[in-house]
Length: 325
Image (cartoon, rainbow, N blue to C red):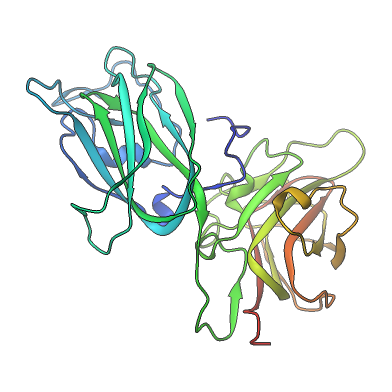
């Protein structure tokens, strides 16, 4: 999937590393239901077969010989508002479903039977294609149910949205950028080798591909990324982790922050950015902690600049929930 897709500024809520699981499918005879949320880009292996037939990288049900249709139920690892889907039928050509629809549910049950609400009406699909479908809905969901009509295979379902975390009763520091708390990367100068959305993923990076990395800069200037905090807050401690980046880590880093009314106002050329951390040297494959920061009060967005280019594995922005300072 291209990094320039229309839902680029939203979090992928279906990620297994957030705790998302496929809990149920009416049928997954040809290809396991769990593959429909696999983080990897789907592949086709020409001569790969298993006991059930041709191996396919996705969820695939058998040919239906009676009335009805197939569906699967996905439980989100963190509840979130859903703003878009990508129903990806990559490599499914003679075996993709002609139509699909999607419902959402908020429930404490593992596999809810009631309370489902239509998010995407029955929609025509094409084979071997991405289907980017916008959802205008601000409600928070815990489950998604994907219906296919009548049967067939879906390579991946990507669920784009934002985490809605609650900090009531929280005492002490929180990472305002952590994806599980609702932080998001919204824009960057370049992400040729690694997505900006890796910067606030849980845990440390597992390898060099699990971070934000730009192409080699051959002209003037430097690369940057803009992130939105889960809620406005005062940043008191920062971690910049260059784990696994050795011959390609940035030489230096700086941070600016500001209070904006929304993502649309947090542009690279805004005059409201103020220095949070002055330009500072970095080292390879290392966690860098910064506690001597400018007191900017509560901010909503941060711009990290790297000089001149390179890769950063994780960015953590710690502060106290408003009113607890």
